[in-house]
Length: 151
Ligand SMILES: [Zn+2]
Image 1: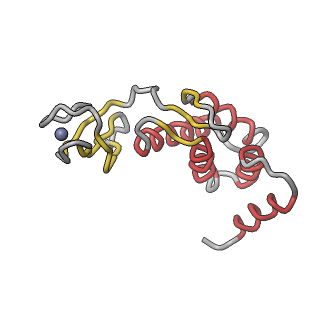
Image 2: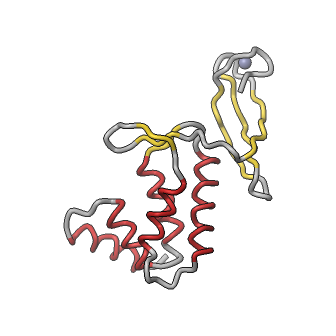
């Protein structure tokens, strides 16, 4: 997005807000060169988000991966398919709003967990065990312990 004042290409996102219809994002940007601030409205059609994996590899964001991870976690749990789809949509919207180009894979996991937590605690623990790669029972106990804490 070129700066309207000096045409510089690099701008920093200083604030993002999803429109009420959920289909566009207003971004407040600041030019990296002259400091000029401007607003852009971007439609959510972009699939250009890159994911940085724990081992440093970069791959393009794939919402199907989020979906399949959630489906696995929710297997045989009383979570309707529509709700799983809604969680995936929410996760994608949040990623779109918070990240411009690249997101660390663990942030995606954290966002999914935050959305799954109020929906189904067993699914939440399952997802956490896969995603956080629990090495032993104490790590799982910690997550369960955290769940039991009053909000
Ligand atoms: Zn500028």
